[in-house]
Image (cartoon, rainbow over the protein chains, first blue to last red):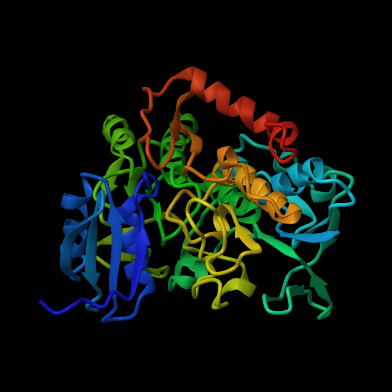
Length: 79
Length: 380
């Protein structure tokens, strides 16, 4: 699999408020179309919530990769 | 003698300045605060202004009155930061030099970042906006009210939820609740980021007949049509719109190499050091950390910055007991009808809020009054 070039990443481990889901939305909204954004989250709920928002907002979920004690959620801004 | 410059006279800047003045001698450091405002505002109090329950005159004090007598104060806006020459520039282009710099310049709502929001929406995140919303509520006789988050990030994440619950109570008192439909719109999949809070807030909203619209990220407001549109494709019609504008950092930081386009300073989540700069620290709303933009955050971050700046002035290593920020935040959430709950958490410990209760409500009111004596002064 080719390496993914992440444009911007935020470490949202332990960010209960505003939390990883809100942080990913912030990154996507501030990005350019085609940018790849990533957040690190330890929140169990993120595995359901983050893909749900990406689908709802019609962006692309590129990956959910284990990273240390967390998951790296990767999203491409498509529009 | 080292020159310490602190940008910002709000909660973070005032605490850092006062604690450093107590920790370091006059021979060790010259401490100066640069504040764009002459007055320090207690911003959490603006939540109550639209309901006529808070006198705005009690929500600010002169910055000078809150600072240790040894701390110098320059009341000017910073227009530029030059990290090579180690100085900031004021509007008259006069450079103010530093050896160590602390950035505590806060965050600002920018309604203009969303088309139509400035014309069509209200908020309560400045004193002026809170007073305008007070006037609008005085004239409101019922209709469709939409409350939500107009963009990210925004400070004090619980405030829109608190406002919604307090508005329900206010409209009931005014006799306008039965003629009103309240909709609470939130950007994510639940009514609050913290699941345990969402788990008690959702039933509260349901009991009070408050509609919820989830995954609502504001894209545009059309004031003539009285409609708010989300990027997810939802349209909400309103008669009164209360949408918290997206925030930005200070103007001089927007696009600066130490910050991003919106002015959020690239900051280490544990040391609070500005990325790539040994003599710069940031705290409070000014950072790019994905944590609550709130006075409470700045309050708990300040001792770490103070320890690190003082150690740097003395050429020592910081005391490891006070050298790492663990993500501590504590805040209250008003739920209306004289009840509130308290959130207390850090990077490793999620909040475990109690059911809303009267004690937490009175604690919040007591804290609002005691703030001036306890917080900017660095007493607690």
